Length: 315
Image 1: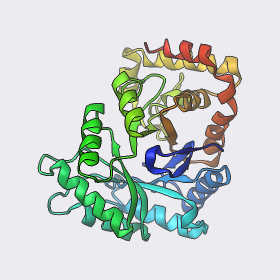
Image 2 (image 1 turned 45 degrees about the horizontal axis):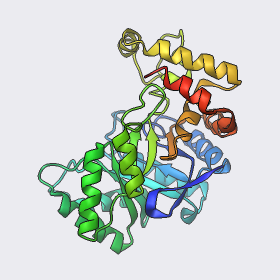
Image 3 (image 1 turned 30 degrees about the vertical axis):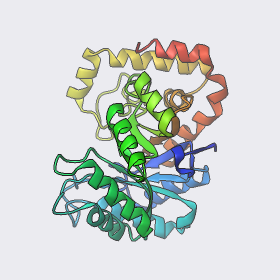
């Protein structure tokens, strides 16, 4: 495993990170334990649990049951908390009734943890001034309940303004930005403004949606939608209309030439970007984790020539 600094935080994170979005509530406990075990055995120390509303209709609480399940899995697996870097989200959906401290405390309670290493903040509501948000984050870090913070899907201009304000007010600036990034969705990560802001302020990109909802894993190639797919037939038809399935086929052709899978090539492409601290992926089986870990083995083969050919798929 390769480890990289998470922006200016100094925290070392694995180049691959395991997510929990729509995952552990949908598979059995033993399967969940096996997935996490394979990731940790493979050197992954960066785990992301994003609270979300229940979609099964079976959870005992409407929001955050994903945290309950994730925390329980970690305790049953016996992994040492201090050896892991655990991320979560602050969504602000109940603000101002629930401020940042209350929202974070709720997550910690459901996870049964004392602290989080990083939270990614969604764009704050209009009722929450940016300076107020930064001051609340500072208090959370000072309390020991949070080590650092990042942003979730913020535009580069907003990230830059936030960094400048934080520096001027001597408050903690964000160290990371979780952004969608893939061969077929190169923006905003590859925008010159994003790259400049990341370089200037020590922002590490945590790449999400790298397989574009499974499109670049090859599982939609010539196959009808199934219950294991995130996209239904209507969504696939829209992707086909936009030429996305054709682009996925081109990635698959390149992968075949390199002797790897489409998923491995898609992950390797993002890891070659020096702004990227880690690539976030989800998995429901140890086999999927194993395949994605294989992306590290082809990094040396993905040279500038191949990168340029991949970029040409989505100019």
